[in-house]
Image 1 (tube, one colour):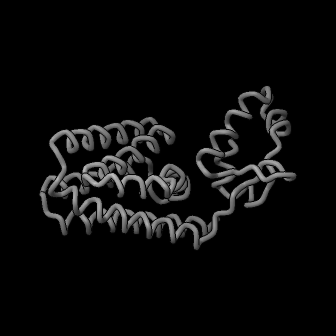
Image 2 (cartoon, rainbow, N blue to C red):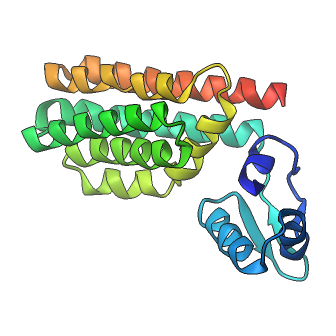
Image 3 (cartoon, rainbow, N blue to C red):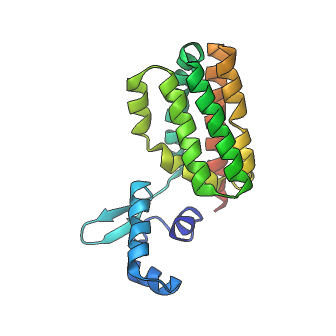
Length: 202
């Protein structure tokens, strides 16, 4: 409820999150609300500001554009390396994760799809064989941006988001570094554009 309100624009950047009010509106105790807010903090959607309380983090167009451009560069480079370095186990894991995303799409399970999506892209980075790349990628808080994608991209169903990952696996299996890099970069930049459109329409 709070997460959807933030990403749907009903809770504006800078809005204060009052746990007692949310609990009262939902007719539940404050404990589950507190847990939910803590999770949102880990996802980078809210932050605690001294003397002000928990606030909704801003989501500007520049933030979104910058994050997706950085991801495109990092993951494109990772895919280029992974095309020649990925093991059979890496490819099998990627296939399993796409299947999990498809199942989550059928079940309309956004949280499950986000988790599988993040793990898919992490696995691409791991398959590059570059620990530095994985560490740099983690600093971008990919879970936050993947969640934002799932909630902001209104013209794609969860199932369609899952299906967009098949070409990445095929590119890695082809062992063509240039193709793999191009497909991953396009995958992320196109999603970023869709997210930006979602913000413009909110």
